[in-house]
Length: 292
Image 1: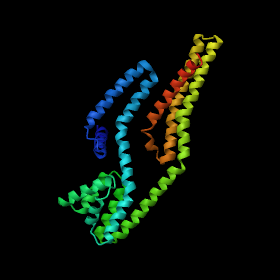
Image 2: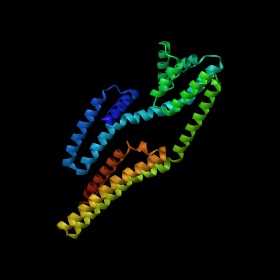
Image 3: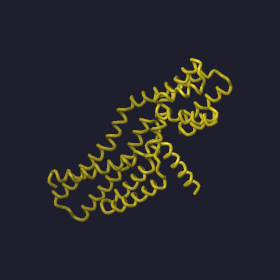
Image 4: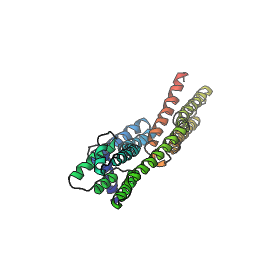
């Protein structure tokens, strides 16, 4: 029960963070209902789909808020260097850190602007800058923002060179994101090749192979129960291979692109379902096209 409660609390906080103002119990209950319906309908259409579709629905219902959270965290970390530079420029003109924070709210820095406005409201209500900034960094779900908050608060408390600290952090974070952009640019072709080959081409080819097997059986006139069972076993083998191969290729593609296997979780069920549907469509339509 402890882990379930931890998951629920984390899920609730994630919904709040991305701005989805819906009771998490409603979303989870709706996900459960759609999962049962998909499994029931899929059972009468295709047994494999009866497994894949519920997994896909669970992945969407639970995973999309976390996907949106990661996108928002990326937006925060991408704009953070500009915010730090802006604050440093304000301090250079003789303003205080609170004035620098107020100046940040006048420019659209995405989620950071909204966070800065909230910080100003908390400071006006009696909180210190350190407390407000620390809370915002914690709520941001960004480890980079949290590290920056620790350094800025420490520099301000110690009376150190806050201006130099802000400038140095801004340059370091900007260099880090430059490396990330270069990685994505240099690995785009590899990412595209793995994704297309694993999710589109492979099921297309195996769908044709399955159709050819059926055609050969019909032409040969040997559609005995043993031969039909053999074709069915090949069909099951192809389906299993397609699903596993699509999942592994997605895992590899995301690792090449992002450098983290964990980010592939939300994409794996999607790619598996797409690959499977392509296989089914090609296996049936190719046979009809040539008059099978």
